Amino acid sequence: MASICQLKPRFQSLLRPLVRRLAVSGITANGVTLPAMLISLVLGVLLGAMFDGVRSSPGRLRSDHTSG
Image (cartoon, rainbow, N blue to C red; front, side, top):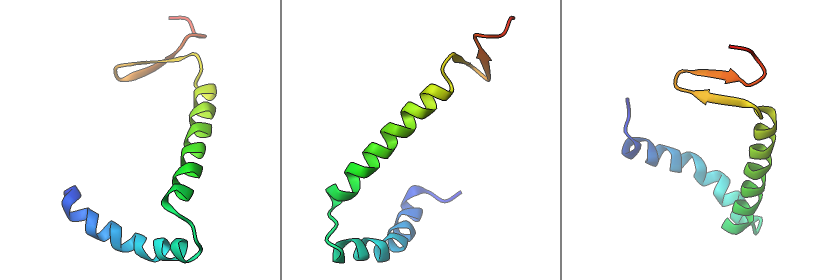
């Protein structure tokens, strides 16, 4: 398995064209971070609502609504 040190340069080279287009469009790092944060927050709330009442145990999931 490749280490993070081996993957990082390849990942950066894949991102460079997108980053250049964003920069040319006038989008800053903060302009990317804020929407990403909001999307993460919304997804966290949705996932929390979907799995409300489900408890995690080592190796299995159990719903409070079932007997046993």
